[in-house]
Length: 123
Image (cartoon, rainbow, N blue to C red; front, side, top):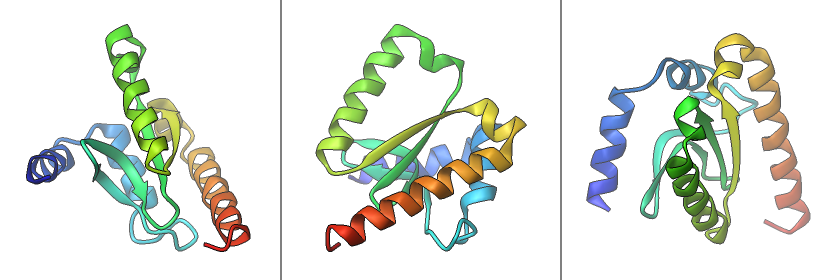
């Protein structure tokens, strides 16, 4: 676990432009009061952005994610996270950089849907 924490800390210092912009949009409960963490360790993996309260993960993806080896690794990570009860949503970097309002609206809608589902299930 210490290794994931150290790696997460390093990733926070080496953010991509899209990650930096997304963090600016999601941090400090700016998104309808939902608390997000960036580069958040979950088991052996590190989620780009995680709302632990809702068990919701937002992943940003650049062109590297279209490579077969990365796609396989992403699939394994997503399967693990789903087994742990998380919902994972993937967004291309471009939406954060070119249409930040659209990104915020989509993430907000996902959060609200998950909050509603959680309440309906008694959570």
